Length: 318
Image (cartoon, rainbow, N blue to C red; front, top):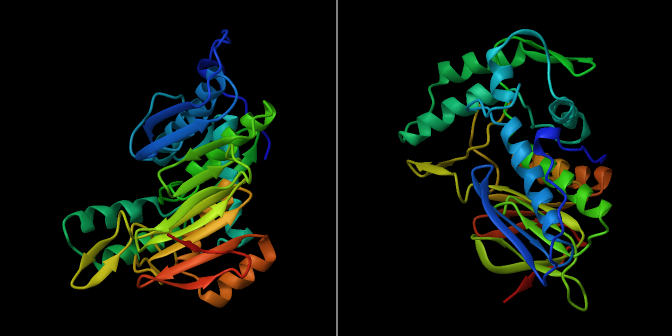
């Protein structure tokens, strides 16, 4: 992925910085706590990595205007042709292309339906079937037309939601920056759903990454990769014994998933995030096919058990 330079208003003054053994920044972004650890480099590198995360959080927000000239919230309020940031243009274009690259159940036009499910579940209610059908009609009759030169046209009434891809995309940009500075020892924990691993400063360079609360003693040993996790463990709501996810099936409108959690290990954050979301609705056979075609490795969890793991993945236990 090409490194996108931050807009001028976000560029950090280059000042002399002291090096330390571990540089760490913990902050709230993408509705979770982000933890960045650099085991080499300078404070300015830590600040740049943080700014990439914050910037993409702001321009991808679909709930409120964040102060930039145009963000996803603004696009959802407008129709017709509009010119946007080149960073936002690339993020949007990537989001709409990913469906054709294996993420068959990933659709950025589910924003309004996802909001209505969220509000309904907040009140411990299942979204009405007629509302679901109305929203599906909006999704199927809407599109985003990419016209080049950072110009797009929103057609239809469906709202854009990049929640399944924006964080991974932001971490991709942070990774590109760190690589440009030849920094290889780092960890960015994006609230467990998106984790960027460089190398640990140890003999083997491997980090230990827990699978999920469903299998608390199980973990993986990994380095130089992204770990993307989708699941019901933090945002799932159970009503009458049925668990409803925050993830929406763009074809049926349902939020009942096939699994409790899907973990994707990949070389690309946005791709792993979109795939892990989509795979919550895939069959195991479909997941195996996607693994073979797109060079990713997957672990699937259901009912506190691993029901599928890639043959190249070793699961450890405490």
